[in-house]
Length: 473
Image (cartoon, rainbow, N blue to C red):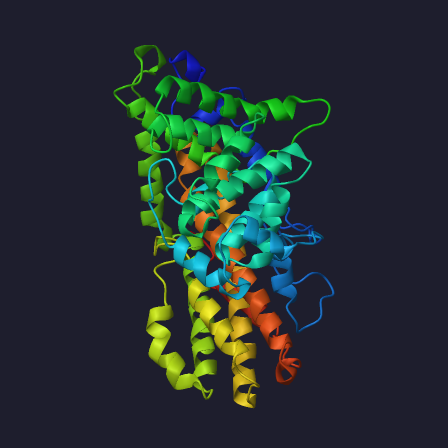
């Protein structure tokens, strides 16, 4: 494989990632860290990547949220011990009241396919150098809240260069996603210019996209190729450093960079000396992913995801019933249809979680003075259904990783086929975990619901039943 800048070899979508690496180094490292095999002991380090434990830890007692605590270590631990100052939000975004921040950003985050350079904020999830910023950024997209937004702002002002630039780029994406909320029309550009003062994957990748498409700055395909290739080489440079080794998040699949590479190669304005020989590999990858999506419902992982969706939908239905039994029930029922957002993940093939509807449920819970015994029973059942969904999602997540591992010998096309499914289950798990945590907080805030304990056996039973029913692909 040859270097893109020479114009004679590297193809698009993941192949470019490997110009300076052995054939399977990237995916080998990724899958090793995915912990495909269930470890003997739980791994609970916050914000360290994909959950790696299925089922309750040895000796766990029935009741509480033990399975969710295990599967949701990343989402619940995204902020770690960081103490945030929400007053910083006013320096970046025009939010009248913090209580309205969620509604404001949920509306803004619905915007998709904004332009080629910046399709939307979710397109840039898992595109950072650090696990910490990726976890906080993804958590904010899943459930926008003041604490996570303030955390990104604080990190963007960190003394640590790698953290700071990751934080700056996270804010660049949010300002571009929600321009009406920005303190100034060009605030994204000011932050982006700060982020380009030192070599960094995220800022170089975005600089290359700007030059590739010419929508947010001057179009220059030669410069785009050079800058993107520089970003492409940083990962291997970091791994080769003997001292002060820099992190490169293993969930950074570099899709944003390689999509630009592919588009540049198709641009008729690309200078001949930078054009690679015509190769169908990029189209083959797209076709392989489409084929995987078509086959997914009939695969074991697809069936696990479908089961997870049933449990998740049941949790939301129980939430509707809880409010339906309240004095505000008629008002809630009347507006319930408008609360349902479009498919959360953009594709009905994969499991999805609707954070907008759940946010409305939480708001309705907060407006209640107390809960009846019937409502408390439904609250407990809803949590158990959601925990069961999380267990199934986590199982599907690990098995998709195993499919990728098994596909290594089939080449890059086959290895990349499951990536959209992996992203979907990742996002669904993050959102579900956050919502579970918020429900727990809402329940604890009411004296009448403090004694509610969701039984972990429901989740364990759901996993056992699914594993028994769907033994093979």
